[in-house]
Length: 540
Image (tube, rainbow, N blue to C red; front, side, top):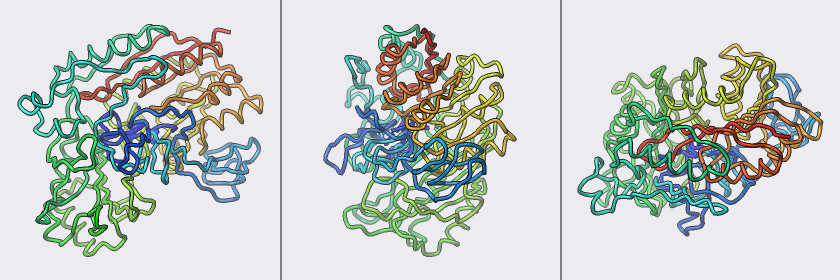
């Protein structure tokens, strides 16, 4: 679960930057609180990294739109009349041969930088939410699956004992002060209890160093009564900003760059944005770093496209941090707590970074989903490939594919891979990633995963293996029904929401599929969240 939402559950930002089909947006699948309350009212707005949504209708990325003409084979093509093959981005309403029409929907998207998406997303820049603080309370219950995680520390104890001076306010690292072995033990018991009716759960795989693992860091900028700027995170269950200078789970270089930007604001006479008055320029700063390549992206989210002295500001920032490889201005002038707006300007560099995962190189833009813990993601994806049992002869679907990570890694072991993703920016990255890696047996389509599978099933198409990596809200009955019609021998379900996974496994069982084994992988140390990969086989 990138997200998948992004809170410390996989999507840390106030707008659920890290969501999955619903992410989806990943979420950063969730907002830092990821209780995603709509407009300060407490209306739960879901998302992969946010609190769970009962809706099975969540589109995974939500960044859809289309042009009109597109070919079935070319490399491009946000199309309303498009076809299915090639590296084409099939963004289709009147689609070509198989009618893989895009959904123009508020059911949001995996990365969730969609517009005003209500049913949340994997990365979760979603949900019109003013209450997205960093504490993702998503261990809820569904159909009797209890999600309560015990052993919380009281607020008073946290103040005196916590490793982090603001943990009692931030609420993002619910388990920070618990010994790591105990954290893993608690997560293992939780997974075993939840999935006991369906399959055996292998011992959870933890990290050697469970600190500073997040490759994506989001800071909210604000000012005190005297106008002095500060940055931090939203306080749990509120829209108040808690000042944070160093975080135990964030990349240290990212925190350092955010501190530098904070210190430069007064000399450049840049005011932080005031949500109450609507005055000010700088709203958020987003940092992404490739842990393998060392490339660093800085996204300055401003309320206006007018950025006084921006060239001098960029020059000064680069002098202080020559490791920065690209700087982007993202314009978000809306009265919303969505982090990223629609318009971007590259102020320096190429406008994206690259990183290496499982031996493949990936192109990562500001809005695309990429798992926030690359060390554990390699372990998770290797388990997924192992569970698929690929021999080189299989036709594979990678549903909710994001920037194509699982599909591209799997393509080395399969005959053909078809990736489907609703976030248009992510699909463009996926197309580019296939080119970068010289892969010819992968095709990517911009579409809602459920509707895409319905169209394939209606055309009588067959696949051998399905990888699915939905948002925290899980998959849909529509998707599972369509998948069952194509009779794949195996399904590999990667989940950031174990409670909705359990719900979906029950429905898989009705369709003649049984879970065999699950592997928990701790992508989010110090938080209550983890990912799990489950092997599901056809029984009839």
